[in-house]
Image 1 (spheres, helix red, strand yellow):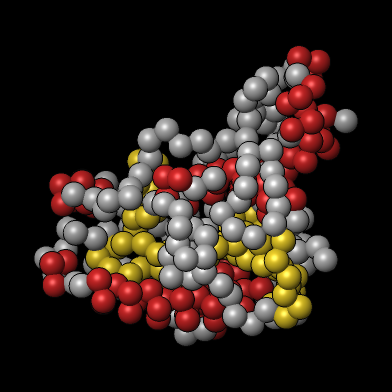
Image 2 (cartoon, one colour):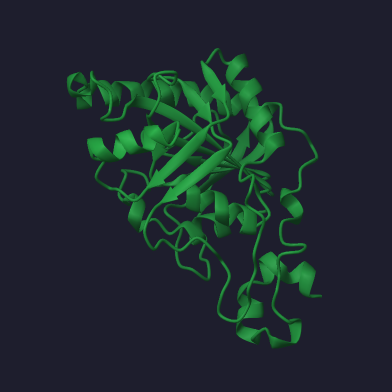
Length: 286
């Protein structure tokens, strides 16, 4: 089986109903173990692979995630497109709880996370001005509409370190910068997916207004968990519709992201690094 669509489930979404011919695959990578076994099967008649970002049972905090292993595992399975599902806080009145946002930009506020496969003698600089696949983004937008989900296409996802949420001062600064939603995971995924030449899109599922909002203190954990549950149900419908309507071919530039990104003299690349990155760069090194 050769999955072509990868699905990353975030907080509140640790499995994806509707799979047929399920099997679980534990994949080792040069960067260690992914968050969980990949659940591989068919959804809406298409081959897919699902990964619970934080592991089933939500065992792994955002700062502990092995992003390289997670994305490399998808690449090993032959995945060409990734739909990432993430619970987020809203930084704007226009994005109330239960709304889905499809960001087209990211802003990094993490500290020291590894977000590249390269180094150890091989340097690559991928283009990241537009970090989200436009073709995949439109597929997801249409699928949200089809599923009856309130959706906004475009906007900026601010990726913070966590695991604590923002201070009120930080939240207000992010709002003054024009950020739309805030989360803790998707920036690294997007960068690594681009280096792996995999199309990537985020479905940012709003659970609450961040602490800037005057009604924030009235929001309880019970309220947020209820919104997580509702968002998860909506997300399953959106993903099924997106997978069903996925175009057979990619019309974006994601699949050739490394074509002009490898800077190192080919003769200077250490053999151990060449072997480690063969899956990603082999077609360019000959």
